[in-house]
View 1 (cartoon, rainbow, N blue to C red):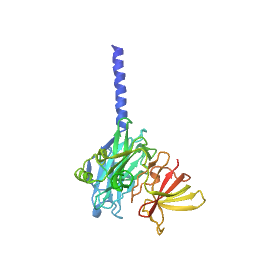
View 2: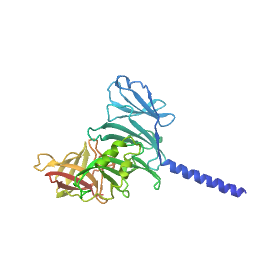
View 3: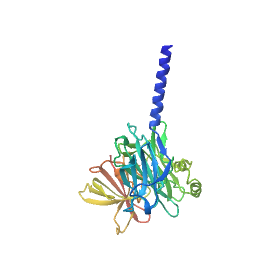
View 4: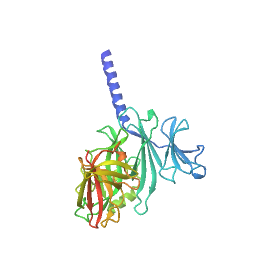
Length: 353
């Protein structure tokens, strides 16, 4: 009888450990928001709102009374231990707070998602996500990256098989190579999957990129479900959504290829030394250049060539190489220059490793 009790006890311990391990990889959304007052904040620049993520810790958002700058404050026992600038200047009550283990290490991450703005016309919504690593060791500088479209349950998706929360980075982009039986050019909502590892986003290469064309049916559905907490992920689960593990072949005309090494990436600008010895600069994420060369060529997007994985093309708050690489100096690259039917040129930059 005693052996039987020991077996049952051991089984329960194992079961509890397994459940704890599963829960450790889920994010907990902290939803209770309340208005408060913090000295030096708010007043004539709007209200101050906070969300608790533990008994003694909270995230607050307000405007600095002196500068008017909107800021996030992380507080312990109502004392500010970390301050970061917000990317908007309007709302103090449009942000979300999560806590949980993203990287399967022994400490939780703190995640803040902030609403920045919405565009006219289509009404694209712009957000910035901040991930603070291993918060039991203090609040270090966060990883910061942009999102277009966001839902409480629609971008941080728990994958049961992997026992981790994956990040679905969503954005709008134009493709000419996905619906060749239609008018080829189209606008698509795109979602790409990432892990959070060592303070960076790393692609999940075995989960396909999702891309859904903006047709009238999607436009109507989006309008009816804009406030659904599972959007934008639910929009990309439609049967018309394209799925691909490797970037499809481009239909634009390839007119030149160069190889080189990255010397630096600063303020949105690549400095490259080409194999010819020439040192040249290319900005990231702007517009194609006129064929007559009155404008400088720009890097439209960048990716990893071995996996043919293209990183999100998001602007004006760019998805930069520092979101996915600790350092790009010395990395070998391939530069493919394309020309469109409208005599515009742009570069796709591929990292060779």
